[in-house]
Amino acid sequence: MTAPFESSGQEDAALLSGGTTVGRLWRWLGDFRITLASLGILLLLWCALTQSGLVNELFLPGPALLWDGVLDLIENGYRSRTIWEHAGLSLERVLAGFGTGALAGTLLGLAMGASRPIEAFFSPLVEFFRPLPQLAYLVLLVVWFGIEETAQIILLFLTALPVSAIAARDGVRSVSLQRLQVARSLGASQWQVFRYVVFPSALHEIFTGARLAIGVVYATLIAAEIIAGSTGLGWMILDAGRFLRSDYVFAGIIAIGLAGLLLDRLLLVIERRIVHWAGKD
Amino acid sequence: MPIEPSAGSGAAAEARQAGPRSARDEVGSWWRSGRWLGALAVALVWLGWYLVSAFALVPEMLLPGPGEVLAALVDIVRNGYRETTLWENGAATLWRCGAGFVLACITGVPLGLAMGYSAKVRAACNYIVQFMRPLPPLSYLILLILWLGTGDASKIALLYLTAFPIVASSAMAGVGATKLQRVQAARSLGAGEWQIFRHVVFPSALPLIFTGARIALAAAFSTVVAAELMAATDGLGWMVFSASRFLRNDVIIVGILVLGLLGMALGKLLLTIDRRIVHWRGVD
Image (cartoon, rainbow over all chains, first blue to last red):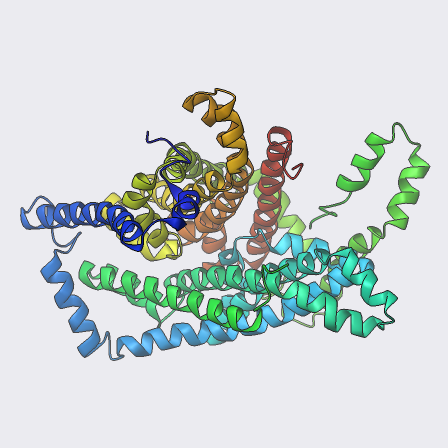
């Protein structure tokens, strides 16, 4: 093992900050070369496995087949809808369920953080729902509301709510006592304390919770589309899997990964814009 | 229904520290702490449910009353559901979840530690871990089923792949959280590389490793149920899914309650182990 804490990690970035730009660039490239080499080995392995016929292309598409599949999906779509429509439907559901669930959860969490009785009242329900596998109640929602959008959006609402509520509650709890006391002693009213001290302090954790929630919501939606859906990215890969079109399955997984990344980045950008004071205590 | 999940944990700890207390004090502190409000909430939900079913506001087909659900629970415990008992289904779910999770910890923690330790290992592996982490697990379940069949192997592989990136990232972050001063202090006192790892870096990383393990177990538990809904012949997820096909909503609700309580119990179990082992958490 290389000597740690001397030639590795962010620590030495600080130690090296006095060095020349060229030296740092070289070091950075040095690590990046290993990444490229590892990526290259993976790609070679993939090519070797698929081209030599060791693995049937039905199970693992080769590079050429995958590329054709991706182009085909982009050009012709899947089952009378373009891939953009499938992705759009999935994102629409995520945003509808996440938006309502995170809003309700944050309001509930703020109230729970501010008031002990409210917290005591709601916490058993929140604590029960948080670790409950979401898909377990999807089945009940489908029986109640049918297989349409309603069941999926309610599912995502119920998924986002406890995650956001707990983050907002913890955010309110983490307000520094000093600031509260300063604001109070300067004569701030209850509402002013909440508006100008508690809420801004909690906002960072609220956003952290929101990013956590959107990740869980997205994973839940893909699962819900796979188990009970007729449109969307999740349904697309399930349907492609049934027909052993592993090129479409792979392309679908890549699309799902990219869309998830996009959602996370979106929230991160909004957070940086709004909570510009985070980490500057 | 959950009975006050947090009840007793805080108050009981206080009581233990303060020495023996009378039952009356316990009740008094329970009352003053307002925790009875939680019991009230659970009771209100129960009452609302009971009233809805008693006055038949909703067809019983859609929402069976508490009585029917209790009867279904007794029936499943005694006779089982479609020739599998509740214990067998619960054990199948826990076995898959546990096997995937333990395998992920055994391989993910050393890899994460190595990634935190060495920039070279990080460069070689981190992009794979960070690509896997946000990917919804169910999306690659279909591939795993194509490759490994519908048996336990594909599900355990799925849960392994769900938990692995979470555990590995948190172990890596844990090494990064080690204070440089402490490493330098140990080194200047003449500690060898192994000693520094064993006595400084590893203990510093352990709180984050445990946090990661808790998140990973929760994710694996959610995922195992989803996987059982899709392709399984036993397990609690299968039970719920099968019940939905026969419109046995009483069995579905039994399944949801059991899964919720099991999820809470798993979380509590890891939290207890965490408190026991990482007693230095937050003492800095």
